[in-house]
Length: 304
Image (cartoon, rainbow, N blue to C red; front, side):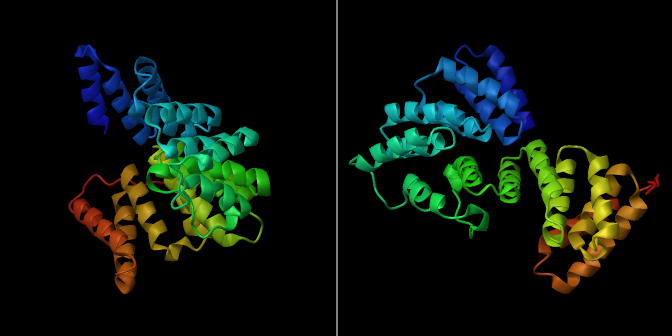
């Protein structure tokens, strides 16, 4: 994606009608988790092409990721004016709820009265009649998916307002930002989750720390990632966790400590061989990395 973005920038400089390319550049920046850059390009494209439904769609998604629910509602209504697609009006109703529940119910009522409305698969019906009456923190996974995934941000805000469950809120927000590849934000919510884990809930604390370490690595904060994976390894029974051992191996390889990297990769191979089908991906990755390290020289020890 980075190479594609650089190519688009070159084309932007030479192309007279650049709004479509700006929109695509913004979409790619969003996919890379670079929200500020995405917002800049998509905002410019929206100003230049205010009646382009595709550009508005990208702007709507980005506004939801930024938790700007007023903007996302406005953008969904603008799309509805252009497309007359009932799903845009329903999205506007969902987007409105976190900041104006009265407006949200008005839009939902308008959608239900439309001749194009159908209960089957209606995102607004599910949101207002099912999701808001249940405890999302104990959901069995019935969230928005695929092209409507961005609406989960409104769902999480609505659930938090009703239940005041910070643990669920941090967990869901971290997961949503992870899906969008926004690792800094995912790390932020994982860190807040870790700080608020109830005493005694060791499983949740372990998961939060593991996810935080993984997000730090994805952000390029390798030392922070290493310190937290090492904490799991030494104090959280991570010595028997193939995922922790693999993560440590990757970090050691990053730091140039090939000896320890090999040792952890070998453990993953031996451990996963007993449960090969459940751990195939990590087994294959460890085998690949170990093979790539064969013949490595200039090993450097990293102090623990």
